[in-house]
Every structure is written in C-alpha cells, then in structure tokens.
Image (cartoon, rainbow, N blue to C red; front, side):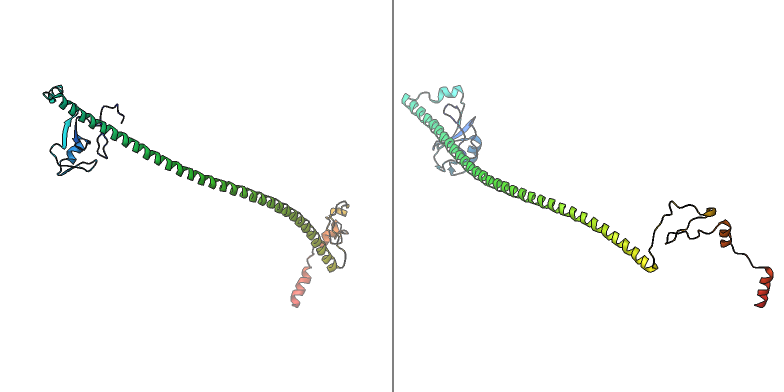
Length: 254
C-alpha cells in the first residue's frame, strides 16, 4: 500500500483486506476489520492478534466508524480547546502514519522474500539446466558412438552378404559338378553291368520300318523288331488254337 491510498488494511495475518464501514483499533496502533475484530476481541482477556499485546484497558480497544456522518464530524470535537483538538489530531495522524509505515515495511519484507524465492528458483533452474545439458551431451555422445557401431555393423553385414553370395555361387558350381559326376557314375555302372557301352538314341533321322511298323529302341540304339513286316508282325502276335480232335485226344489221355 502506498502513502497516497485512502484506506488501511486489516492487520490480521491471514486477512489483509481493505478496511471499510467499521474497524477495530487498538492502543498498540493496530487496526482490524469488523469480522476479525468482533471474533478476536470478544474473548477475555483480549490479546492483539498482530503483536500479542494484552488489551485490558477500557479504551484499549475501540470500534470506530471509518466514514462518519457530517453531524458526528461537527460535534465530536466541539467545545474542546485548540490544543486538545491538535493533540487529538496529531495522535490520529501518528496512528495513520504508523499504519502506512508498517504496511510499507510489510510490502518490502514480502518483496525481499519473493526476491529470495526467485533467486532460489533461478539457482535451482540453473542447476537443473546444467544437469540437463550434461545429460544431453552424454546422450549425444552415446548417439554418436551408437552410430559408429551401426556403421560398423552395416559394413560387416555387407561383407558377410558378399561372402554368402560367393559361397552360394560356389555351391551352385559344386552342385552342378556333383550332378554331372553322379550321372557319369550311373552310366558307368550300367555299362559295367551290361558289358557294353550304353548309347542313348532318340531315333531321329532314321527311315521308317518296312510296312510302317513302329520303332522300338533298345540300349544298343537299334530297332528291336526291325525285320518284322506286316504279316510277320501279325503272325508274331497271334496264337492259333489247336484242332478239336487233338484237344479231345489230349483230354482223354489225361
């Protein structure tokens, strides 16, 4: 509160409200709002909530109207000697000045306390910022090292992939050689078993057999039934039934 303000504040620690209407003033130069003054000073003995002073005198606590009527202003100091009026006025001004000074001191104390809290917060923020910066640098270094490790793994993977492809090519070659050798071995075994070289022929380019008989290929590559004509082939594949008499005689014998 500045000096130019026209209202005092309640001196109750948890109130600090502007005084209006009625107020409670004490001989120890403290003022309270009507709500807290009525609650605190209803007990006996009365104790000032601001400075804990005992208020046992009859006029140590006064409930006063902050905006008196014009009639009250005209009659309250009427008939008093000028020095008495000045003494009362000086004491009232001293009370007001004391309240203003106390409020100024309270505001300065609050400001100093707030500045101290701000400094503590700034210090804490600076420490946290430094800690976060260190953590960030550490994480950056770790990321850099992980990138290097990843590049190393990529290089190794590329080398292993190339080796694997080369091994696959070698395997395909070996597989082809193995198949060729196995085929040769099978042909050799078949030739050894038959005692003659085995020749495979498709029969392409040979003249047709006489009489249109089909070609039968053998292991020697010649036709199996090349000398058969139509009649010979018919007699070769047909069987004549025996005469009836011969069949009956054969039955009687048995």
